Image (cartoon, rainbow, N blue to C red; front, side):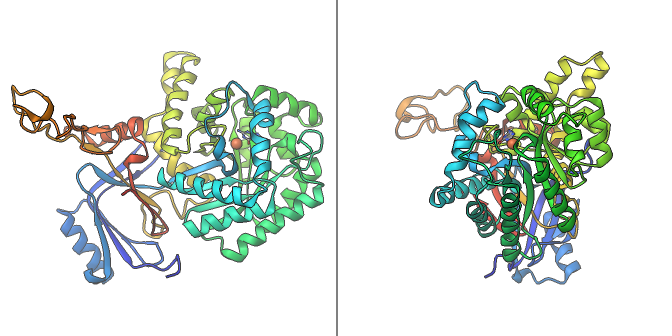
Length: 496
Ligand code: GUN
Ligand code: FE
């Protein structure tokens, strides 16, 4: 069967997605019907029972129950939109966790450029890219905006793997055409060669997925210091012709900001460098944006460019604390990025959690109490960043990010641990080999794990409100709670 061809599906039970930045929409006894093309064909909600929701959806669509694959959520399970990683470097995945005390510019030289250059070896690239696609899927990332390397063949391989494994992706060949700043062993030979190589990777995606329905190209000038003015202008021209998405880094580290000032003395600011070369468009995703000035924030808002907030990376590389509330107040749309391997975790749930923590560090330095409160991001807000916010950044808000008719079924089934009966009665104690204590210990004398098996860190006692359940998932959840993952209706990951 072609990856796009499937049976009709009916998902039943509890669903959670963002209603707005501030509010989650949580509904029970619901049904989401997904057609053979992976699109949501009907949504029923708050029915008297799951059975009623099922009947209602089937009769609305005229589907026969025998021709439909059905999954119903169990206790402490819910469907949630797939996560969207708006900034991740696939070739850096083997370096996750390896950064020591480096900061951006020495980290690039010591760890990043050597690893990226080494993926010219396609056997190595296949190993790394397969692992990163499968690992991010296992954490519920259904869409990723990838930076690849400068190498055309390895970039094309990443495109092939995303398509075959079934992850929605933007794949970018990294442009690094400036000699002197980029190492001689890892740079484009000329501006012309860089643009030609980029076009080759775009045509490769087009050959596989002509409508860019699952996999799409993304123009990727690495960051201003890596690029010549001519290179950036050529990419801007390419974007105008083809309407492609673009991505780069901005104002991540103070040393980097100073370097940009020296390399581009004619431009008033880092943001102005991109604007002066035609790259500050509504289809540009800017990663980090830690040290922006008021004027830069206003210019980004005016141009409707997007920002990928990468809290794990910004803490790991000692880059600083980006201000999401400030960006939102400026009117800028924001999504989340793992920035592997500046960030050590491939998980967007982890990025969302760290976004809340970083916002509290921002709050510590804010003015009065009202301002401090304002800086803090809520559970609802960071889950919005992880889904609908990311979708807007990538221009996919009509396609993914929530559960509405017409959108693609890009989703995860989350299951949290329900605390089981201990097996002990009042007054009994755990003793080895079950002597005198009934079911307290197993045959080997071991006290059983709390939920019997590998259910993750979250214990649900049954008395929590659903808002509290979501908070517990955000702060204590991990990939053990991501039970199944679908992209465009296709099951692409399942635990056990
Ligand atoms: N700036 C330029 N290249 C990179 C990169 O690979 N990662 C991060 N975090 N920042 C960059
Ligand atoms: Fe990055």
